[in-house]
Length: 172
Image (tube, rainbow, N blue to C red; front, side, top):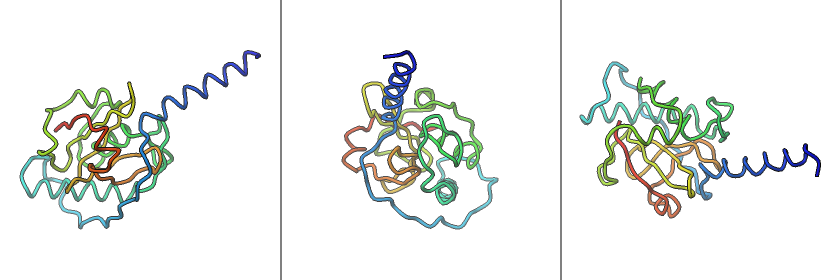
């Protein structure tokens, strides 16, 4: 094989490895209409009214990004990966700066139990030996994320795939 073919073969292999980091099994998309927006002056806390504000902001983000295709390294509506989607959502909708990668995002905040999840908490999954996936908890066992197979989508934590790959949850 010539050098160009070897290079292309290796790049293809690397692409496959990276893409599995945010892959999920096929599932039905959950369709939601975003609730009515409220004042952006409210700060992110655990109070009930503020959790409602966070949920509203997340559903608004979903309505704007729904179906945006997955692209490893992507950071825009032309294509986005899971950690970039979380980073953009937190910055634009909640005014919180987060690091760019899933690994760094998983090192933030306070670890919480799955039963303590509230809107805006991060949920992490081990999708391979070294691959991680991140999403944002919404409510009622649902989370928002950029899926490699469906793009930006809302999924259920009790889906067989997500349940078996659940790693941890973090509150920022």
